[in-house]
Amino acid sequence: MAGERKRTKAEALAQDGALNPSPAKVRDPKFQDGGFFDPQDLVQVKYEMLRRVQVEKTSITDASDDYGVSRPTFYQAKSDFADAGIAGLVPKKRGPRGPNKLHGDVLAFVLERLSPGEPIRARELARLVKDEFGFDVHPRTIERAIRGKKTAP
Image 1 (cartoon, helix red, strand yellow):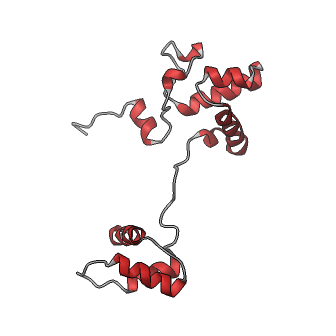
Image 2: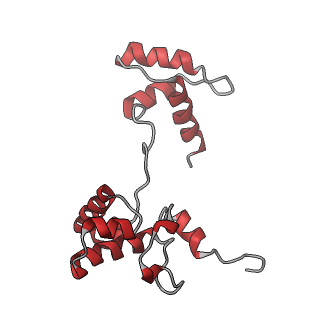
Image 3: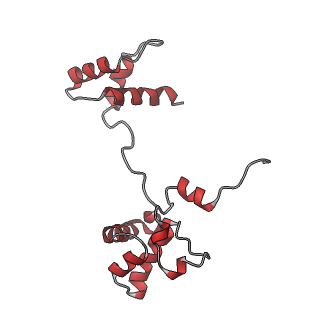
């Protein structure tokens, strides 16, 4: 397709969540020559760090320092790799995965009380949820959940 430019590796890594936020901290000489090893590739950096400890018997402290990560990060990478292999080193999306209180019956309850063309009245809906289900929900959570349902196919 004309006019489309190819994504750079850094753009692809960022989109996949695998862009190393601190590539300048990677001091291993293999990552300095601009060849195959890329300090921006967080998965590659973590894998090489683990390999260096396992195969070359480098201390965890030295490897963590050379690869620009903390020791807890090393241990987390080691555990993730043991659990899922190389795929375990790909960072997971952080934070909540959606409205945690507004699903199932609660979301249906809220949606039933909406009137097309009228304002959402999230504060009132929050009070109704509290009365009906016995827990507090922030009005903004209600607005987000409703917006998600309106834009869903």
